[in-house]
Amino acid sequence: MPHCVIECPIELKSVVDFNLLVSAVHEAAVSSNLFEQGDVKARLNVAEYYVVGGIKAPYVHTLVHLLSGRTEAQKKRLADSVTKAVCELLPSVRMVSTEVRDIPKLAYSNRGAISG
Image (cartoon, rainbow, N blue to C red; front, top):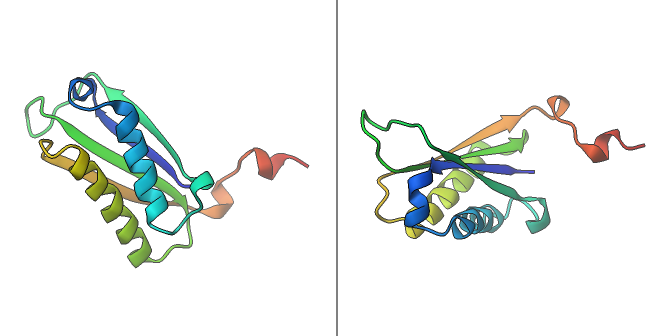
């Protein structure tokens, strides 16, 4: 945990190497000092159909899912770190945002939790 899910249009592939984008978000989450490097997961979903402000404009939105328990200040620091990393990598993209969502601990499971 966390899971960093990046969303952006497929057209951005001509502007940035998607592997670099995923790595930048991953490193930004690690640099928040809230997680161990091996615990951070980052992935990219590309959109073919989208509208931003009524037109087909580039954007990057990162949704960070993490287990509840962090302070609002920690979540803000994480959101700012991820947003800054994306802005530095893609200075020409005006719409860059990051959203941090808590997952209630009782509502989350993984292989380790069910392996006995």
